[in-house]
Length: 209
Image 1 (cartoon, one colour):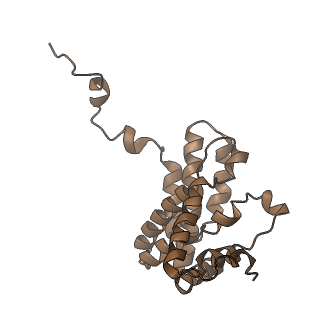
Image 2 (image 1 turned 60 degrees about the vertical axis):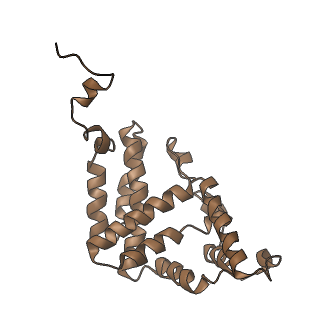
């Protein structure tokens, strides 16, 4: 592993390196997920993706009786390296190579978090534990939910992307949730929630006489 990207950071104390990491994580808000370039609609940044992935991972782990905190933290850090590498879509990856593990190690260097976070990354990549497989599924389910929303909004090509994403799922809990997401209209949580009379009354009080 080359330490060239760290040469000017050597000597910074741990608290300063933690501050550096806070700013680095903020870059994920400005790092777009690149696959939507091909889909033609939809957009999100890596920070948005990581938040919902962590929430989904926690939910799946609770259903599976797994270590929910472990899964959530694994999901939270799973794309941190993209603050340095950016997000490559599958065509980009044909021509560009990155070492995500090295980028993550550099991001964490000097923070004191290395021994806690890097093993999570290695576990996720190996996918040998239930928790890692649940985290992998959470990553895909966040994507599937976005595809379903785009499909509901009229992008028929999103429907072509959903079956391969479903095939990548590794756990029963992940498959169950993803199937339900695909069968659920993305707007129902808010559209069906209010009393139906709300839609008639929303433009002020309705006269009854």
